[in-house]
Image (cartoon, rainbow, N blue to C red; front, side, top):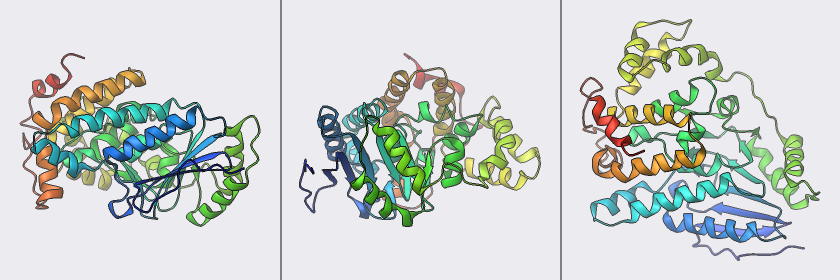
Length: 357
């Protein structure tokens, strides 16, 4: 029997329906790479809450409309406009977005997410709490917040800090994006399916005969269509260098050694990484490094609480407003970070963001 919880309308930014005891949620802003608005966050939360108590829903599938992206993050332009107008949308957005992410981490029914295309920032926040995280050859995963003078939130202090070695520190501090093989290697994805298998996945979901163990039923379906490992993950080869450089005590030491020290055949990567770091917000990178190292010792609730604590100060005292201006509003790509260099950044400036935790 097919129950329809909601008849999708063309203008809905979240499409929801139940087919074969599976709740399907589709982010439907493809022109904006399915970036999240507050209304979308609320719609996702409403449907997940309803389905949690509905015995006719055995599992949930989360995806984005179109081949370009699952979700490229939050609608940062609207948050910028909110702050500039003296409004509170940006504050409300983060509170409700983090609450949604936490609901997904703790959901009692299995959630399968299809991270096809760009899965960045807020998209990672949705995906990383899911039980079955699927990538394709089109997947581009990342926490690129430092590029706009922000820090990797939405639980990044929890899931990045738990990647083996220093890989999560590297991904958070650099904002680097990774593809499918690295996502599997880092434990940020569970299954690889070629994009031409997604239609077969849908057919399999529509025909799935659920047992008493829906998670295992979904795993068995994925096992028929995909794989859990891919060869030639670039980060596997770079792992010794990343573990060395990104365990150093602070960012000036990291950048200095990236330029000065050759480990194996990683020197070209190291110099390119140092160049990349020097384009990022020094304040955002330093706060990110401290946040991720603290996150290793914290449970998931405390990680989200720490991120919210930083959020409540960041629009006023961080670099995000300047980063959004330079990269999204004026598009001059010449952000005037405060301070402009790592050498000019005082440790006390970083520490004050964490006061009260």
